[in-house]
Length: 374
Image (cartoon, rainbow, N blue to C red; front, side, top):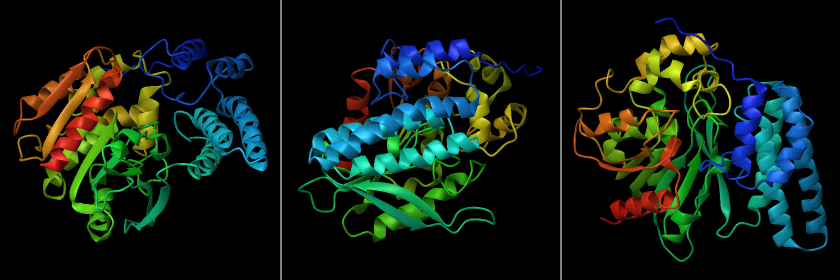
């Protein structure tokens, strides 16, 4: 098979993104705090996917919200300030979406982090930015930047490490359902995204070694009771860690992530026309530090956890969650997990990527909570 790259035209991207903003589809990413009318206003000034134009259009809306947030703080209105900072963060998130792969989008991502940090000053329970030393290889970063939140009224709670995929970073993790259960949450960026110190690779699971050590050494969480939750492409790393680091964790969740079939050329070719709004393979190539789609297609089969011989090894308790009609990563990958190794839990939902329904998050949070309390 010869890979044929499909470049999604601007009109298709615009239609998918506006549908998401209006909530016409289950997946609202990346518009959790964005007003749909303002999204349409930003698109009205756009005619292409040029990164600089894209970042400018959505960044202008973010700036409006940031100005209103500062004004609200000046008049002593913290509730409005928080709302406006979250909107400013969200529109800068759209401005750098799906990845900060150009100078304009990288600048938008820096503003996104700053606006989120401003909003986080009003979070309850509060958010702590932690910096964990990372001893990597030449050219890699020296620290892991993560966001820690501790539940109120519980001493040394269990810890959930939570991360997203190729376009959803630590700032985008909605962790309140875990906090409400009395669980601490450490939100981080998977390899190749956000502020992660290394790109995706065949052994990038080494990112988590210092994180597990940090959890044990930290006195205000129970580092012997750790669960990991990876969303979308991040589910790949959760599944791999469940097999390679099973002694460090109590439970793992692969929420819509790839395992084997997703890395084949036939699926990659098909997924280009799925419900991912931009070029999926291009964004995957960015996360894995590759030169473009063609390089990713050639490299991807080596990522298969089946071909790496991991799936028949013992693993931590693993929950597999996805939508049965996922066009980003195939439901067949989750069915494959059920046919290998130790028994696993699974919950498949109607719909597309990640199976987003009103029951999905409560199902995941409830399962994680039960596993950590065993």
